[in-house]
Length: 239
Image (cartoon, rainbow, N blue to C red; front, top):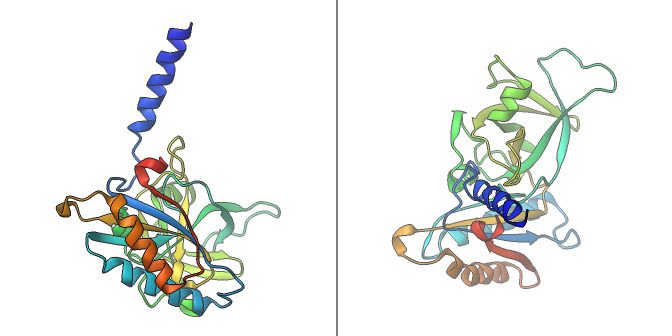
């Protein structure tokens, strides 16, 4: 019985190791940041920090790409939102649609290797009060818009309307879970104060992406010496 159980566990472990996360996981470093609301009191302050952070990280030697999101694939469920599709008939009272929340900068999808299958990502002009575009994944289309054209549809969340401008590939919020519907809002809207910085190293440099952890943390300290970082992990370590 012990051998049988060990064999089943080993097979399960192998299946998890071979699970397709829907994105690049090799040579990727993740660092979590939390901007204290007592210091970063406005969306504009948060956006200024995020834009400065990305620009400096991308300029580090050995960095091929970098992005910001509230949760990278495999990092967990994080949260969800209720929404309606404006072009659809009103739902019955007490019924609603739920989708996993993500916030990301415009270049995040390319940096993480998440393919854009239809349309485009939102542009750099999608910031602060001008943010009204959204990107969804394939699972969202399969679940909520089967047989329909997703691009141009409108989603209402928290009394705010967003237009779907792109459809991206599916990713897993957990290595053991199948892809679920996800919507990506512009991070530069400025509502999010907890983010994960993902850094992809330049393969040609021949270095270990973990070697970028100290230079990246120095960049954070240069921008805000009182800002702590946590969970400095490669994606392989995290998974």
